[in-house]
Structure formats: C-alpha cells, structure tokens
Length: 198
Image (cartoon, rainbow, N blue to C red):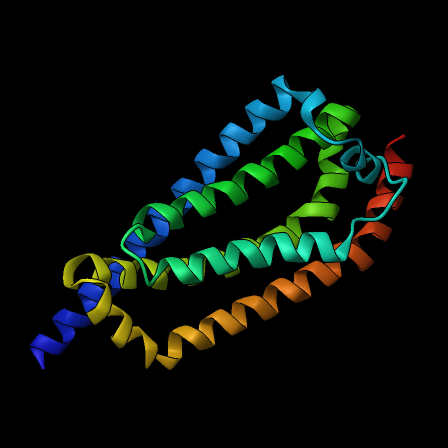
C-alpha cells in the first residue's frame, strides 16, 4: 500500500515537473517571438496585418493545419529518442507564434492593442496551448522510455497504449473547436473592439 502511494506521488511529481518545463519552453518561445516582432516587423506577411486590422478573416484551413502539424510532431516525438528535444521546441514554436501576433497587435494599435488581441487570440490560443501541453506531458514520458529501453521496446509498449492515442484525438478535437472559434466567432468581437479603440 505504501509502495503504491509512493509510486503515485512520484508520478504526480514527474507530471508537475514536466508541466513546468513545458510552460518554461512556451515562455522562452514567447519572449523570442516578442523580440522578433519588435525588430523584424517587415518580415511578417502583409496577409497577417490584414487580419490584425480587421480587413480580412483568418483562414481556417491554414490555422488548423498549422496547429494540427504541431500536434502531429508532438505525437510522433513520443516514439523517437529525439522527442525530448523536439517536444519542448514545438511548444516554444507555439509560444513564438502567439507572441508575434500579440506584439503585432500592440505595435499596430499601441497599448490599446491588448483588447483586440484578447478577443482574437487569448481564448482560442489558451485552448490550443492547453491541448498541446497536455499531450506533450505524456509524450515526454514515452520519449524518456525510448531513450532508456531503445526504440523497438518503447514503440511496442506505446502501440497498445490506447490512453495516449485517445489523448491525441481529444487534443485534435480541442484544436478543431478552437480554430472554429478563432476563424468564425472571434473576428466579430475583434472587429467590434477595433471599432471601439479607433
């Protein structure tokens, strides 16, 4: 009984440690994204600014496929030895993209840019980042198993772990819902907010 309790406590500790690690990776990516958007403003595509100024709506296909690709990278990284590096890098990439968008809103509208960024990005990005990080916590555990036991043994174990595949499907569904909100509902509130601050 005491052994089971100890094992359960150790598992919770690992999950908490991995969660903090991934949140740190996200924040580092966000910091780099903010610096990038501040210095290399001209490198951002004009279509990106047409979304920010409210003159066009974001493409559902483009944004969904981008986030689905990040999810796929995380999912596959669980099966390979280099997943320990690929997973936090993927989360940092998401932090980078969110930060670039928020910084661009602020550069475009000044300090009031936080308001349209809140409606345009916060709610949907929160769902997407949550889905990516939750799957990443599991993927890190399996990637560690690959490093310890070798690809063949870990892959055989993962193949029968239905919980991991179920988590991936749920994460994909969350991303799909977030992108629907981002592309079809949030632009309405964003445009109203832009009209208010101008």
